[in-house]
Length: 160
Image (cartoon, rainbow, N blue to C red):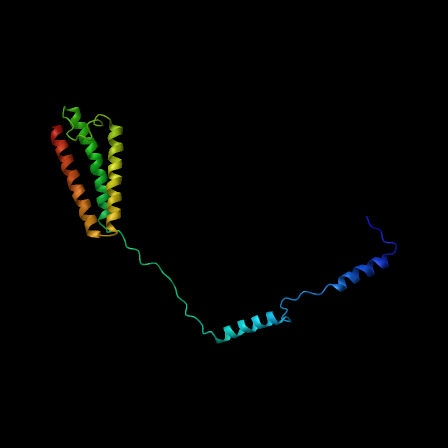
């Protein structure tokens, strides 16, 4: 700890040190380099015409064709009817004709998993398709619904 013999000497030293520091200015343009830079910027601002405002927008979003969502729902319903009709036909002695489904035909959980994956794949393909060709996506879904309706009809006939 520093002790000062006389408080007035300590105060004088502090004021002296504070007096030696130069005050900082926000814009000190006394140096030629800073003065030239500030004048050049002011000249550029005065000469440059205002630039037009450009608003960048994304292209308008296309909407999904209206028939697709009902076709997706009907396809899912047909998949569930296929599980139901297949189970009924198998219970009455019919044999699974689809070689890919023969191993899962006796397992309702396995059939549901395969049908869910298949439905997801068809809907995903249709969603990708409509962004490039709307009509092709609708025709694709009508065709898949028609094929599943035929399969379900066949299964219910086999169950009789």
